[in-house]
Length: 115
Length: 288
Image (cartoon, rainbow over all chains, first blue to last red; front, side):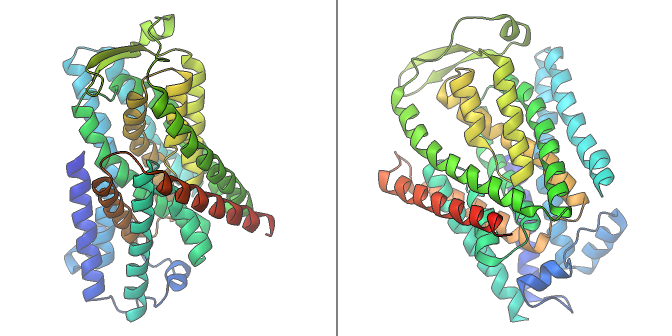
């Protein structure tokens, strides 16, 4: 779990460093502009993210860091499920998987419905 | 290009302070992030919530691991309650999206202000609970706890004893945890105070088990609302990234600085800050 945070923090730090050193063309000047133009709007299509990373786009790096961070607790739940499996505690394997399924449903079903 | 550099550093700094103060008092720094961003910098509340909930994942993940290793965190109780917490979070974030899109953000402001007042009250309460000791821990078995194995034991290093416990009043506790999840989804906070209340006061688990298990749960709960906000475009990484990093740095620094007990002066300061922000948030809401 800690490694997840360390990993995502490193990625985020890298992204911020890139941003400060080489701001992308057309970057907004103020906080209000950032929010108004949705600069940094997550591009969820893997293709766009990969392309951005290859360019060294700092925003894409930041998005990657954010995604890693979000994935960390889910990995935590999955790891707990494995722990319960090792204990032979099938009830809690089920409960852990239920939690995981609920999270995935939230992100991939509820989220898009709300959009 | 200096504009973007300036404000990223500024957000980073603000977040460090929030994380620092929060960790020194034992409340997540997250509760100060949304007020600071909205009241201090005019950030629309939906983006502030997005940044705050991301920072909540970061701080929760970082601190939870140690206690799970120490076997103080009760993984089973945490995972079971997590069902309610995550469901609550989904409800909460859907409500926030509804309010924001319906021009009803002021409802969120007022709710946040009230929660800030409640948190101030909690800072006082936690001090009392810590001093009261573990005499109220429940050890009598009950059917739900038996069925779901909602019990355990841990070694209290300072008391040099093994403390056994059985969760009681589980349905009520589950309800409180669900509500804590709703607050987390709605406001972008961790909801730890309420979770600890549910586990410690309602289900009568040992205080240390409650706090560590709550910490474990918060990050997982936050993923639900974060994911939904993300998909709907309310996570602005330029804002969320420096804030998350700052809160983590601030929390780590706060934990290092304050190894022993928390001095009363910091608590008083924190309470005043909470009350001030709370009043400001409510005023904003009322004057919409």
